[in-house]
Amino acid sequence: MSVLERPQLEPEVTLVELVDRVLNKGVVLTGDITLSVAGVDLVYVGLRLLLASASTFDRLQQEEAA
Amino acid sequence: MNGGWYVYGVADGDREIDEPKGGVRLVREGRVAAIVGPVDLCEFDQLDERLNDLAWLEQKARAHEAVLDELVGEGAVVPLRFGAIYRRPDEVVALLRDRGEEFEADLDRVRGRIELGVKGFVDRTALENTLARERVATAAGGGSGRAYLERRRVQREIADEASAILAEAARTAHERLLELSVAGTVSRPHSRELSGRPEEMFLNVAYLVQAKDESLREEVAALGRAYAPLALTFEVTGPWPPYSFVGSASREHAAQ
Image (tube, rainbow over all chains, first blue to last red; front, side):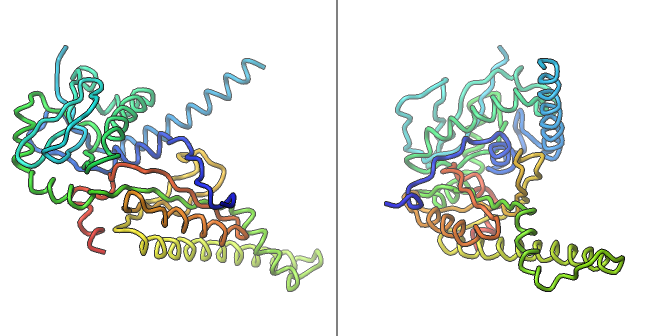
């Protein structure tokens, strides 16, 4: 078995990848339900903002530590 | 505690859970069974705000995935979208009664199959540098204004050429992978900000394949080797529960 044929190690599932599936795909239940998720775009906006602010936060922390 | 029942997915009616975790159990009705677990409704109130809380979202999304992952290995599982909660088990029974036929059709479609995600990335600078080197023999020299304009024109042409190569690579990859799968779906690539990667994502697709079939992974590796000189890379994620191939939205894809 060559290196290329060996199964690759799975990269850890990223939150974005996971959210892409659990919030964007799968059977949607509507109607007489107590709670369900709608407005996925809202999630994406929030997630993008949070990712941006998280990286800003990291940078700030690094600067403080320096 | 303000209790409710979170519905993770739907399985065959004769399904058993060997070692239930976190109170996960099956609610059966006819030939289908809902995979449910107890939750505190208070943890899900003001959902719009919660969804923007990254730590909360990560914990809940991973919990959702973990329950389905346990069950997807053997037997069929139809994943539901995140955050479906009923107050009482009899409401879950009513759901299964109302949509039983649809769930049965989904279970039949995904039985013995798994979802694999494939993403294509490009180091666009490296690609454009490669294209520029190919043109070096014909490039205009000198430092005059005319030469500057000529260089700008060539740069624009190279950028266009790179975009055309990516579109063609995406089309070729999808065609070849679709041949090896039961069905496929194309999603919008993630922005660099969202993917958190220095490369640009140009392909974001998912395929429904037989559980033990490795041919799609092998084909992705072959695509990677073929496109490596153009600074393109491909990645496979999964196996996933078949999120992208259930529900009415998947009908059109499955028909392809």
